[in-house]
Length: 82
Image (tube, rainbow, N blue to C red):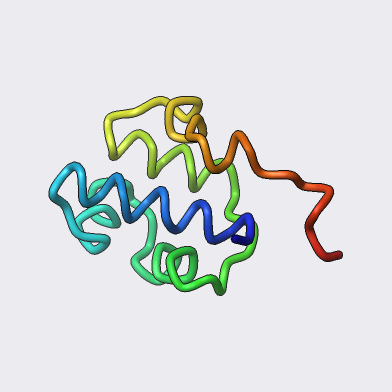
C-alpha cells in the first residue's frame, strides 16, 4: 500500500466510524470537496499538513491522533519508489 493510500483509508475509516460522508467532512473541515476527492482517489500523493490538520479537527481529533494508526506507524519510507 502506498503512503497516500494510507491517508485515504484512514479518512474513509474515520468517516465511517463517525457516520459522516466525505461531502460532510468537506463542509465540516473547510477543505474543498475536490481536494478530499483527490486524496481519496489518489490524485493527491502528498497532502499538506494544513489540510490534514483541518480534516483531523473536523473529526474531533488532534493531528497527532489522526496520524497515529498502525498502518502508518509500520510504513517504511525506504520501500517507496522514487
